[in-house]
Image (cartoon, rainbow, N blue to C red; front, side, top):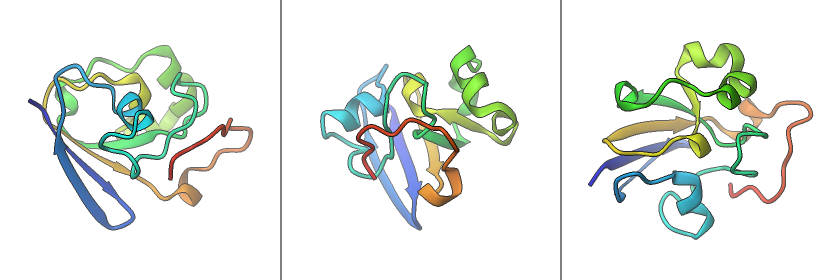
Length: 113
């Protein structure tokens, strides 16, 4: 089973997940990475779940059009949308504090912080 290491607000959280797991779906049903992962729409529209991939990015597919539209230049810095990723290998992610990632006009409809 893939190991997920998640960094946020100076803390590190880790757990194993089933193969082909979506972390936003898991957080939505209150399983790890809940309550640490910030997310909102779950459809790639808001960008609230943007995370920087620290390790394991070589196992991810190329960014899709939703990630390209939402993240733009941040893709080159290693950011991805957690809602668009299905984890099948070990991965290490970091999520910035909300104040660092807030974007004008982004939808917010029930984010878990």
